[in-house]
Image (cartoon, rainbow, N blue to C red):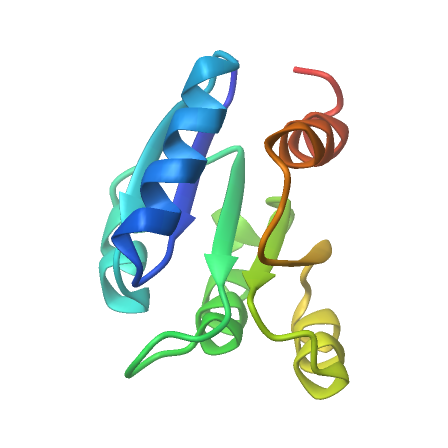
Length: 122
């Protein structure tokens, strides 16, 4: 299946996503900050990334912008995940290159369906 990176400063959110995705055959790595995510990306390639919008120091949209500037990540599907449904964040994420913007809470079934769609059924 796919190699997926989850970036979220909340450990519970990471655990829920990891469980959901690994149960469906994906390999998952996680980072608790944008800086940690950039280090992981520099040491490996991911088929899809899920980024939390609200994180300290470097927020998810800043991370998304940095990732899109990297040749290996320019076309990687990226889902922005947040508890905020504010239109400003949604617009910023779209302009920065997000493929999708989902709000928490999410259903496991919807997350798997979304991931599978972005991965082209891998």
